[in-house]
Amino acid sequence: MTFLRRTLIAATTAALLGASFAAVAQDIKPRLIRFGYGLNEQSNQGRAAKVFADAVEKNSGGKMKIRAIGAAALGPDTQMQQALIGGAQEMMVGSTATLVGITKEMALWDTPFLFSNAKEADILLDGPLGTKIKNKLQEKGLVGLVYWENGFRNLTNSKRAITKMEDLDGVKLRVMQNNVFLTSFQTLGANAIPMPFSELFSALETKTVDGQENPFNTILSSKFYEVQKYMTVTNHVYSPWIVTVSKKYWDQLSKDEQKVLMDAAIVSRDFERKDTRDEAAKAVGDLKAKGMMVNELSPAEATRMRDKLTKVYALVAADVGMDLWNEAQGELAKIRGKK
Image (cartoon, rainbow, N blue to C red):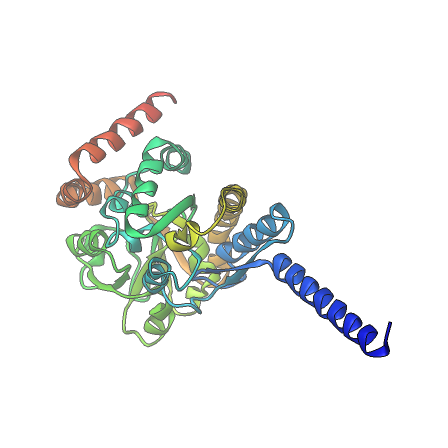
């Protein structure tokens, strides 16, 4: 064999081996999935996002990796939702309230005083009714995986303690960009101002708005105690978060890959609910220690607010459909009857 021929064979072999190694490297390159969320990394959202990412990597044997991006770095919920629908982003977790403009049935979860406690919420959200509403998202380009706990929402403001409905009169209150929240607080006498969460701290600091309403955990992790003096425990709405995937992206995945995401989402949900509830149980004490003045709305005042919101209930029922509204009320009656 001539020197030239040996050289050509060696070069060809090296090229083939290089191509093979490149192909193998290409095969094992993990799927990178951007998972956006609004709160910071130290929040309950951030901790659960990490649990989700770890479960995805473990369950996929490293073939799928979540890149969790918090602090609304990919934009507010509404912007991320549109990015998912368009296929420009793969995943996110955000409030169901900001999905109402996309899937009207999500407005059910915004109903003031719908749930009496977290157990009722879990049963309804994880049961057939919650699944039915979640599945409606697919018609709009989103795939809902699981509901996370955001928690019962409570009021804070920098003007005065809210002990009765009249105390809300004239308070400039930031609400989510959602008609049920807007109408509810306008009905209760507040000057309700819709605003993305990412702009909220600055608006409170500059007194563009006087107050806001969020669960204890969010009030604490977002350091609203630095710019708010009063907190009223109202538990007025249980508005959950929901983990969603771009349907364009979801449809590209194999059944096994879809299962990896769903299984990891369930693990993250169970962790997140327990973590959120544990944190909420001590958050009130932490907020008091940070200097907030905390009072609890009396049952009589909560009833007055509920009675005042009759037209809001009619609005929600009309928005989501009477059949769905009646189904939800029937399921809740069943849950309460089993106590």
